[in-house]
Length: 181
Image 1 (cartoon, rainbow, N blue to C red):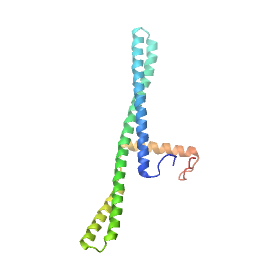
Image 2: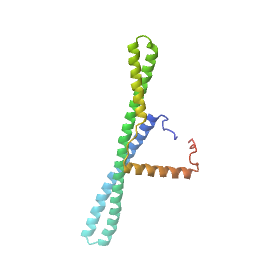
Image 3: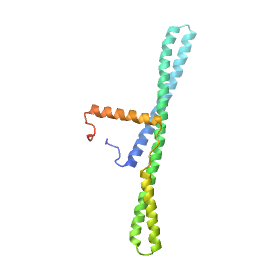
Image 4: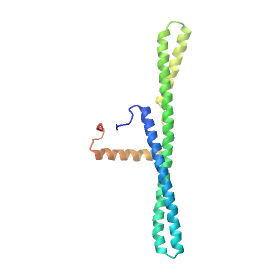
């Protein structure tokens, strides 16, 4: 794993969320810049058309058209990253809940061993609590994150890019990646 990336899952999720949010901020700045450039180019096309310079206006309009495509791509990318950010928020919260349950279960198990035989009703209740926490912990581990066709496509594209990068690095598939130094 790359330097600076935490080894624990919660840390990795927070790291990824911070990076996604950083990219969202960059996309926001790019979008503002593209908007300004788009307005300036449109005014230039209008000005050239007013002055009868249709050929130059046509050339600028082609650039404006490309800029509008870029603007759409930037906005679509930002929307997708925003959805990823929200999902990562949920994953971090879910991770917090799982960690809290695991911690509570450890305490309850310890308590159960310490007070075993003190009172049968208390023993039974503590055992039931441990069973419920264990079941809840198991349920959390089986949660599937719902996806939609767009997110499936993104995951497939990301897997293809990752596979390509691994092939380009010369590391055979399935082999551990070399540590960065």
